[in-house]
Length: 230
Image (cartoon, rainbow, N blue to C red; front, side, top):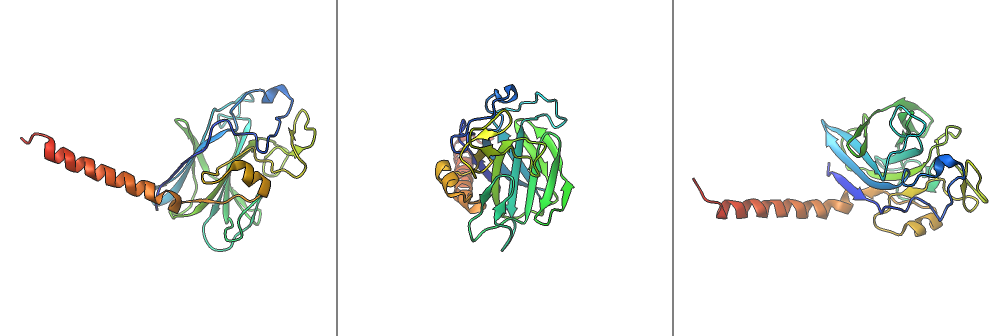
């Protein structure tokens, strides 16, 4: 498994120029701003890590944050579901998801397309929200999205409607409820306009890891040549 590390621009957690709900609870900034995503291998299993600009917990959720919903949909093989429930996007025709991981301050769980759900181990590790699902290591595709937590929707994404309100986002009718998405190689605005969210994959940072490995090898060689020998 090739480790993945992607960053996302700060301050872009407004979807397609959405206005946040008018309730005072949502006056804080950055709590749904996705800034990083990692997929690592540990003990033959995948570890998923998501970083937000800040963790806000005005409602004292046991998970340590209460205003944000995080969803990671995983493409583990051919086929799969093409609708990304909650986030409101579609996948490209050649990709779909088989497993999804939904994280809020009150629960962390794996979901399948047939509605089955089970808890997933979760912890805050430094500045990262860390999930440890029972997912064998592999070079998968990932669709990552954040939204405003809503306890009354199935996937806990607060909806969007024209005119907004105290508890809903203000945006165009039919807009995706996700306020931030991971799109390292294309415009976020274009992705919202088209409604299709491409996955991030290991092949996208394969050359980065190769370059880092080569640089590390060169450094070791130089040190061996120039450091005094005893």
